[in-house]
Amino acid sequence: MAPVQSLAIDQLVPQPNEMYALAFTAVVAFVSVSLVVRYCMKHGIWWPMIVVVGGLITCLQEPLYDHLYGLWFFEQGQLKAFTTYGIHVPLWLPVIYIAYYGANTMWYWHRLESGSSIKAMMAMFAVEVLLAGLAEQFYINVVGLYNYQSNQPFYILNYPIFVAIVNGVPPTLGAIIIYKLKPHLQGWQNLLLLFPVPWAFAANSFGSGYLYLSARHAVPAVSQPVLYLAAATAALGSIVTIWAALKVAGVPVARSAGRTASTARMVPAE
Picture 1 (cartoon, rainbow, N blue to C red):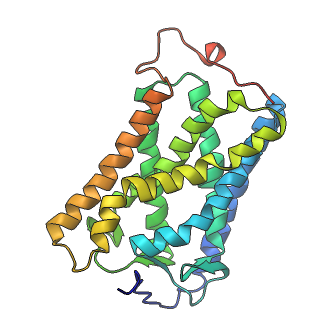
Picture 2: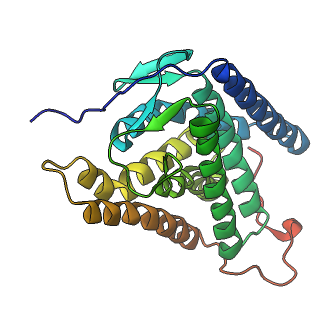
Picture 3: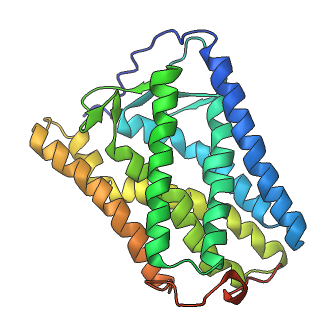
C-alpha cells in the first residue's frame, strides 16, 4: 500500500504578504522573548530561556503534523527554513514558535506558580485556543501563506476550527509538566526543560488526535459522519488532557480564599 500522501496543491503567495507576516511575527517574538528575559533578570534565573529554545525546536515536528492533518505551506514566494516529510516550512514559522510555544509556556507556568486553580487554568486554556485560532486565521485568510487541503471537518473560513483546540494544548500542558518537574532539577539538569513542550506537542497532536488521523487517512475513505465524530474526539481529548494533567499535578479545583502569589509554591532558581 502506498504511504500517506499530501495533495500539495501549491500557489503563489500574494506579495509582499510574506514580508508583512515575517515582520509581524518577528515583532511578536521579540516582545515575548524580551518579557522572558526581563523575568529572568528580575528573579536571577536563566532556565526559562531553555524553555524558550524548547518551544523553538518544537517546530521540527510541524511538518509531520502538516503532513497528517493536511496543512500545506505555499512554496512559491516564501523564504524557506527547512523541508522534511515533504513539507516546505517557511522562515516565519520557527519565529512564531519562539513566542507561542516558548515564551507563552513560561506565562502559563508563572500562572501555575502564582496559585491559579483548575478553573482559572481551564479559562486560560480557552484563551490559548482562541489565540491559536486567530493566528491561523491571520496566516490563512489575511496574508494567505498556507491552507488546509483535502477533506476537512468543521471547515469554517478556510479553517478546520477543531484544530485550534488541539493546537492550544502544548503551551499549557508543557507548563504543567515544567511546574512539576522544575523543583527536582538543579544545574545542568535544567537542560531537561528543552523537552516538555515538544513532548506535549507530540503527545496531544498524535495522541488525542489518533482516532481522527486514523479515520482521515483510512483506505477506503470513511463516511463524513465518522470523520466529523473522529475530529470531535481530538478536540474533546485535548480538553480532557489539560483537565487531567491539572488534576494529576495537584492544582486545586478552585483558588483558596486569601491565596496570593506570595503564598504560592516557589521553585528554586537553580
